[in-house]
Image 1: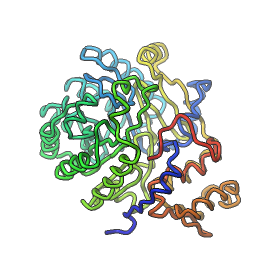
Image 2 (image 1 turned 120 degrees about the horizontal axis):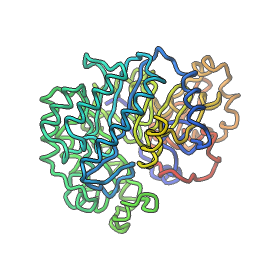
Image 3 (image 1 turned 90 degrees about the horizontal axis):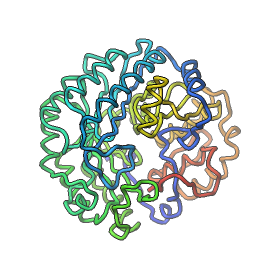
Image 4 (image 1 turned 30 degrees about the horizontal axis):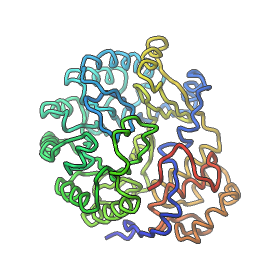
Length: 463
């Protein structure tokens, strides 16, 4: 086993450093998005700072779900009325036409993702229509070499739908599973048989989808170390290419659906840590590579290969192999990253629809990166993707002396080194096996927006 794949578990360190903190799907994070910046300011900065020869990544947010999953913190609309989808899609098409005028320039779309909500809420014909519009406005690949993925609820997707998805160009799917234990499923209002999940996987493999991801959640009601271990046994037997194992953050004051979950049914903090420790070790023993945070992949998966080659990247969809792509996102609450700009669409459905109808765009808030942001973004991305940082390329790229530029951070880094989270040298930073689980906390040292030595508000806990 590759020693770099080992996680050293230090409970005392975890308890000391397990504060709330960003997931660093962007830097600056969404908390720095400013509603005072106009759409024109954000778009113009994006257009002037982007590389128009670089490829694109496209994202579409489809918010509809037929059923509410009580744990969910996504922006969603719970409805069984399928007729609500078409007016929304028509608005997305109007927004898409505007986005293509701003950013397309015939740039090749290397990555595409439909998320939600439940993208398979829309009909097969609507899926064909949506992909047709994307192909009309953007330069989609037709040779199946793109990274084109969609999130699937096995309760919502028929075998015919899998065939349609493959037909219109998807070659990756991500399945929401969360837990296979029936008592846990009932407690979160997501009863989904293992047979349903397995049938989708088998159909996807027969259709030629080249990558299958499964999402699991630890910390849900009635989960125990033993019950989640049994879930892992079932999942490992299904052999997905990638696994995301998320921590359930119980914040009922922020997410209304979580009010249905009784706090006293949740596993204790100690049990959650035990579940996480067991999960990491069990998946590593089963042959998966620990990519970072909550992601695992088989050694021959593109994520694992990109990490070995130093080419892994991170954006609003998590870890990705497409560091060279601008992310053009459409739909309610969707977040784009264009050049030196991040911006987010209106979060409310009615506000999104009105904004698109009135202006062909729904940009609500965003941030324009300054020179310091760009440097810190690069440092944080390197650490969270590769668990190491070489000073020389950064010094050359940005024209600075690393230790001099980050003089204020040296005290905190020295504390990390004393505690065994990192190894410091004259040439760089190496995150230790003991520090990998706490990578978010290490990255926080380089976050100029977080008050030093203080817990942060607005974020979930690191572990």
